[in-house]
View 1 (cartoon, rainbow, N blue to C red):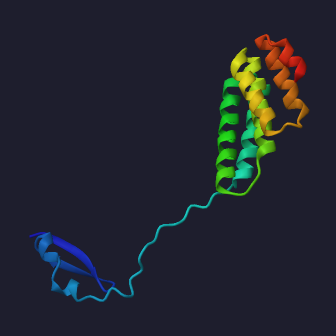
View 2: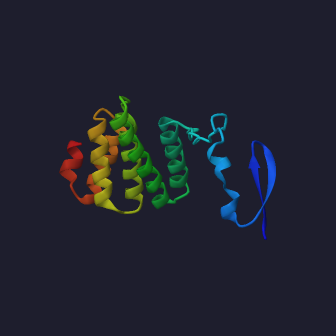
Length: 155
């Protein structure tokens, strides 16, 4: 015969026999009202979305300064995605932040000689903030790289 131990009201009790005999009618009559039921712990974010967006922007800038443009573009892309999600789920206005992120992406694309993605990102940057002179300058440079001098002069 096998020996098993089980807890009954805080005390260990030795039982003999197979496992199926370990559970008796005594378990069905037991009062479980004073038992502690474990619950799921909620995960608390250490950073809010605005802090994450700013951190990703800083990381992207550091990567771009180190000539690691593709990695910088991925950081800027993550930041853009978070900005768009935050605009959908809250009343926060991230148009200026989105303009800066697209402008930085356009500069990275220009450094990589990816002229059409650079022009697209620069146009998006100007769409989000029309008054930003840096975004307009980046758009003009991208248009010059494409070969549209007339459009660059207008911009």
